[in-house]
Length: 231
Image (tube, rainbow, N blue to C red; front, top):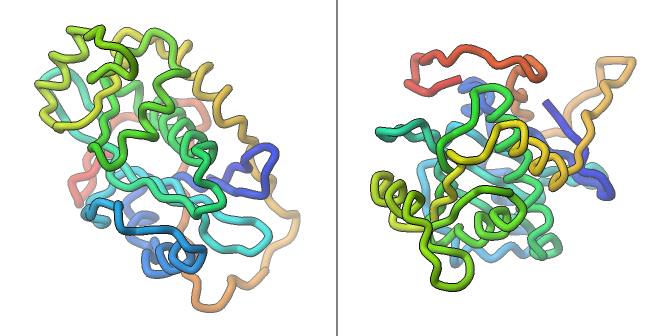
């Protein structure tokens, strides 16, 4: 499903279904980002085929990709949690607004479709986007703490259980309704209206990935696909 980011010309597409994920043309995605001057030196390698949640940001004027956010769903003794694997935007979007909106968007979609995760974590290479999000989520606890030296012991215990070695945002104490309200205030998107006519050809050489099916705000049962992914 496509959503338009308010006050910009950017379209966000959330993908979760395995058929849509395998259809992503990563060569084109990273080619567009590289052409825009995105530095890849600090990007941590990850298994793109293992991603279970992806948000693609597209410039609606040029049709080129301007950002990508990839996460994997993980399991712990407590509840399912999420790990940020890839977070990249073109230099003109490096102020943090787009990455924050993308993370808020994907987390809101996951909460609506699959339920609230226990936590969201990031490696040190990607923790800036998570720390940026954390200051806007009421009642969430972060480990290590974002500022000062006050340690949230429940969050620290959860981080130890997860064992990611990076930053963990503990969402267990956040009511789902409150979390969704905070997330929607952050990314302020509206659903893209479908055109009243069909038959427009896709741009040559640019494979279009099908967005994940949505049941609006109705939660769907968690099932396991042949790839072992949930959704």
